[in-house]
Length: 163
Image 1 (cartoon, one colour):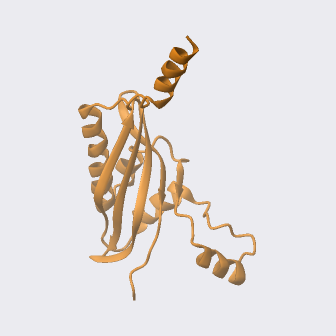
Image 2 (cartoon, one colour):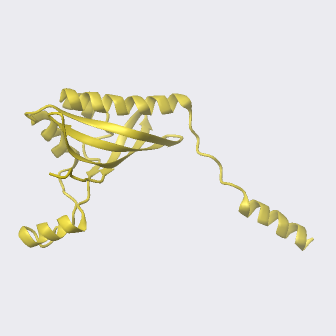
Image 3 (spheres, one colour):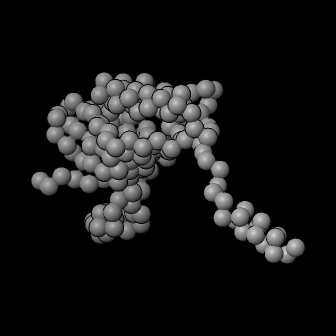
């Protein structure tokens, strides 16, 4: 009897976890948010951009590299931890007041959805006046509220092209 229980418990322990709950309709709606984000950015339409966010105080950050942290600590602020405080509001202000054409290009988009939560990951290039200013990997966390997908965090790496 104990042998049978051992086999049953081993089978349960080795079974794959349940698959995330994802629908083609939600994946299409999430993809639409990425397209709306790119269009609003290119049009410098901060109101449309903001409508894609859960709120204006979401996590919005590109943590600095150790090299950048060391430089800023040496030159300006010995307590700098590599994370700027301005968040989405600073980004929206930057977009609204940009004097040049700007856009963000997305490549290799991967969407993982589980019910009312989703993760979007992609390679990006941030372009000003047709020239790549920085690039890296960007991740969004999204939540479905009132039937609409909203961005509730954005974190990205930042690399600069060779000058």
